[in-house]
Amino acid sequence: MEMASLTQKQLREKFFHSTDYHRIPGGRKKLEFLFSVLMERRAIGRQVSVLDVGCGNGGIAFAVASLGCEVLGVDVNEASISHARKTNRYPNARFEVVADRGFDLKKRYDLIICSEVLEHLFNPQRLLNTMARHLKDNGLLLITVPNGYGPREVLGRTEAFIRTKLGLAGLVDRARTAMGVIDAAEKCAVHTSNPDQDHVQKFTMRGLGELVTKAGLCVVKRMNSIFILSVALRGKSRIMDSLDARLADYLPPWVVSGWYVLCGRAVASEGHSGRSDALARDCNG
Image (cartoon, rainbow, N blue to C red; front, side):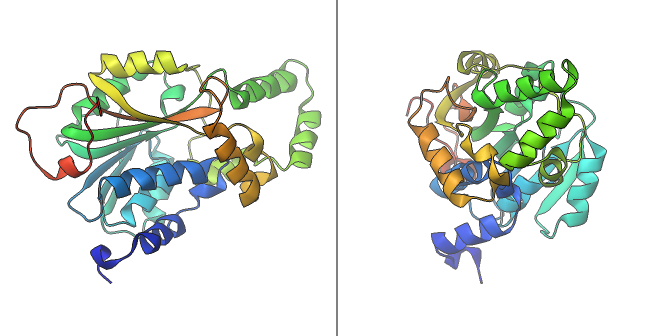
């Protein structure tokens, strides 16, 4: 069946059935946000080019590829790219290792995705500048990051303190099991094969906005991710996931665990036309 003949409901089913990313706490809401962006921009078909930066094991790239977009996933971690290539069943998706955060692919893209990457970098500005260079004039950049002072990050730092400083790792493990918190191995199997998962950045919305501005971009749309409830029950409770996602929508940004930030160029080129117009929205819109 041709992609263009599918209903939005059918496309959504393809999108979600193509990946296990929704097993990660908050993963379903992130996928829903990405799907809405793709639908609003009519990003169906191979004429739409998508770059997934820090693609990990390919969970998000596979979902986008299921809609027929041409997808390139890049990552500095060779094990993650190897895993993505082995599990890839989409001829319109490719995966490549990049040497560093200042790569040059000699191409620009309609949509760039950078999900849960910037918080791992000592110099996130460099990668933001690189992504801006790879963005078409009317393209979009989707960034997702944790709130560096939100409940999930605070809980993680508290857990690390209890484990390493107080020497009570067994107590933490028992508490995680009792609450049904997804373990690191299960999360990484879905998300990435890179063992280095330390967060070295504590983002605020203002701080992230300043980095975006310095890259010559502006925020088009922003959404809160989750609060904290869906971290429990290993992401298996759809009710808990839905409640957590809805609750976060009504909370101020500084209270939630993270954000989805959609960016475009601060100044679009005059007279530009092309397929990326279907993806983009004016920064002042």
